[in-house]
Image (cartoon, rainbow, N blue to C red; front, side, top):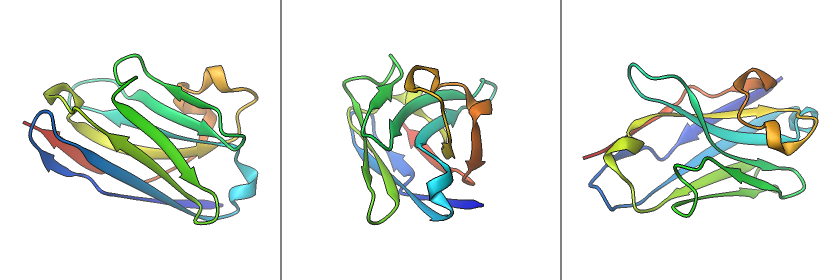
Length: 124
């Protein structure tokens, strides 16, 4: 079992920055991808970014060039640096971990076995 705990959410003005963190605990060797998803009220959950254990990174078109996903393997922590935030980035952000056969399918939420509780990001 893997436990995920997100932190770093908050309120920021448009154009500002936030960094989210996701700390993993437990049998993390059973997973090879970690990802960030988000869900705004009344909208479907969408994949934001993912990173594989080999370092491969994937981004949604809506955030590419503004968001950066990184990982610190020693700390078992994944980060999401969010710059140039827009009001449409407002959502609950969730960290997820899973074992994926290959990277390009990273946006399929059903492939992730473990999810955090979420952290709210509000951009005004």
